[in-house]
Image: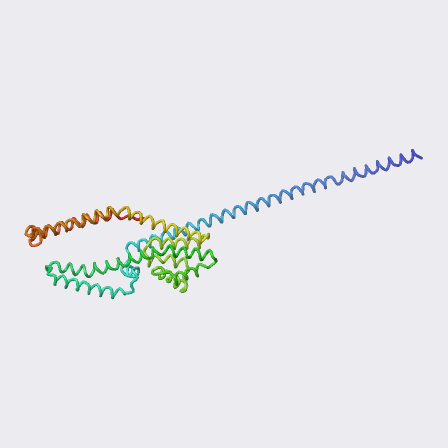
Length: 337
């Protein structure tokens, strides 16, 4: 009985092994194909992942290149606008100079005032006993020189007052932006609360914005009415921030610090050049003082310079050479910061 059971059991085991071997022989190829298919699928998935990573990297690189190109184009356009504004600052037309001086007079009325000024100055020179050859010069000086000098004086004084208050206005904008106030409201705050001429310039920005102009474009136009590089810096900072993004409060804070440093440097240069200016004043006043003292001590000695044609020629040549020396010294003492 035991032998039969062992024989049957061995037969069953051998039959099972044979069946397993046959099944494995038939299914081996299919299993191998499935493994290879799985490997190919994993390879494809890895390739897809790699392609996605490469594509994302390429997209990021393309985005960086595009933003860099846009920034370069913006800087190029801003540089061209700044060069145009610099030309307008250095040699603006008379109408622009009157506007930059803060004067509301029209160009026609300015010409009328110039003619009146020339006539009055010529009449005063005639009453003072000036020679007839001097009267045309007095007319030209009164009609063309004196009114334009007055406009230049008003223009320079207005720019100086603007630069005194402009860094404080930028600091107010920085605090307003940091506290969550929009840039539009910060500019309106300056336009309502700041002293002149800062208030007038920011009021023009608000008016331009209400007429449909964007804030960057409106700030770039500030240099048309305020002929200084600081106003151009402000417009460039706002324009770059609007196109490239970034921290506006930090950018304006840096600009405020730069403007204050420029102001300190100008004051330092002015202090260092005071000795040269004092020397120039003394040298320029010395001929007049000596001539006056000689006239008090011996008038007959110096009067031929004023009563004879040769003396007048000497005085004219001396005045020309002295004017050249004063202009040269003035050029040597003025530094652009």
